[in-house]
Length: 213
Image 1 (cartoon, rainbow, N blue to C red):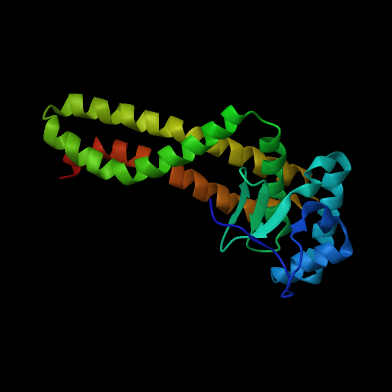
Image 2: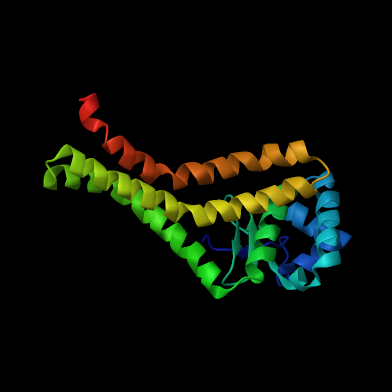
């Protein structure tokens, strides 16, 4: 998780911005200005907040923060962090907040472990392939192990990919401009998917290495 800092205008002593503040013109303007947004962003953010709060008043106290890049919902601190005033990105993280605040600790733990396993697996895949080549001389046996590792790696990535996909899908379906929302969110989902499939791809490639030499 990236470290969040409160989104504020350059005024000492400014209180943290909360989701319910975005439903007011002053709060939406503060958000937009702090993130380099436009007047259109201000209007869209205010309307988005009103729409969410109409059915989910409990999210009003979620703190809104700024991160250096991308966007994140911090489950531990119950904060949304964004790096731009893009309303679709804010909606995506709000969807995560709605889902994760209402789920069990087990589900949140599974998501956290999934991220950790994927990150470690991506770093360990190449050394593991080289190690197996040194330890298991029989090609069929080695490739069988690599296929098992590829499958296990793919399974480890599934929880977060499903969570990302569900959040993006809900944003697109609820957006007044579905094409624009899809265009904005799909690259981020594709990046998540690509990152999650690095290790499975490497393990499968490892079964073909000898054929390419």
